[in-house]
Length: 230
Ligand code: ADE
Image (tube, rainbow, N blue to C red; front, top):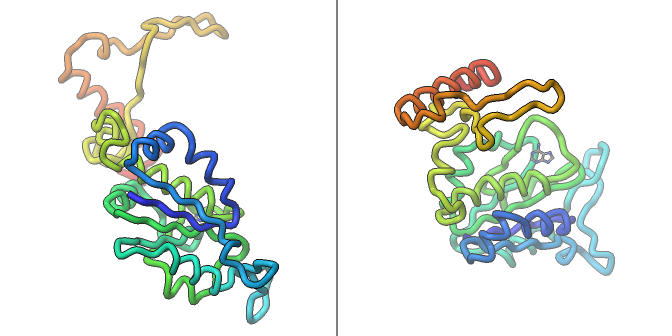
């Protein structure tokens, strides 16, 4: 899979994409990242990329010419083009799974007041928002989408089960995941002196009981923190 990002702040992305699972995904050749500075397609000696909005109003708008040049250069027959904006459809786990099936994603990270309407009409296949809050640009949203998508590219997570039985996934009814525990079995809270124990059922080795307990935990957590998912 190829993932291109068009941005005015490439450094925002190159750091995170060189870490941990994203780094592994690209080093193993499963995913190829391309981070592109929009300014290289800017207009004139000053490499202008923005202008004041027609009709007035605050802030600057990204001009169409640099973006049309960028997308012409990056295009491929398999591309799927995404514009990150708070006006987009809310990005969800199901979108991550769907997008992971594409061979080539091109993400456009906006800045300022947004991009010229002609870019949204002609260059973009879908608009995504990562939540109902406004960030200073689309770079963090692009990273969020990339991370969530790349986890679903086969081979990226070592144990395929880890992307199946997790929060929002079907085995858990689309709800929140159950809590996890590891060693030690008993841990003394240094602040209260209280002995904190791993739930007994997890130590029994009874898989059916453990599964039942996890499903109950998952349901209770979803009901209390995310009733909208029930
Ligand atoms: N750009 C600014 N805020 C955003 C958001 N919440 N989602 C996607 N892109 C954005």
